[in-house]
Image (cartoon, rainbow, N blue to C red; front, side, top):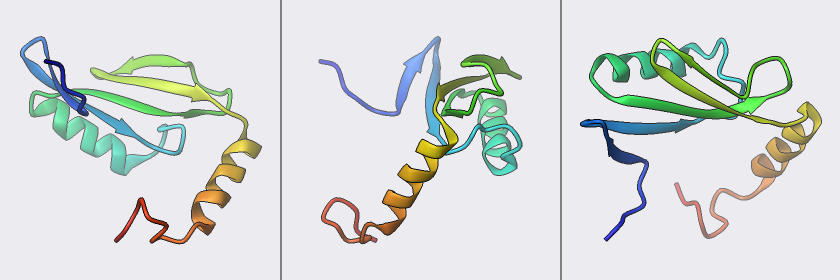
Length: 94
């Protein structure tokens, strides 16, 4: 039986996938968390955007980074849509 989760076994280490809405470069809060988790024995994979400045895939200090190419305009449109939806739209409730 297979299960879908953000944490899975890989090479006897658990893998954690982090998703951010930026290019990851210069995002110290995510970078610090990823480094702490890596130093604690986890495999870390980060999914983020690229606006063309960074490669689609790279590994930095054992942290795998996967970037989805997107235009800045489309990112701004998506950001605007997400931030104008009511927080209690049925799926998300805080």
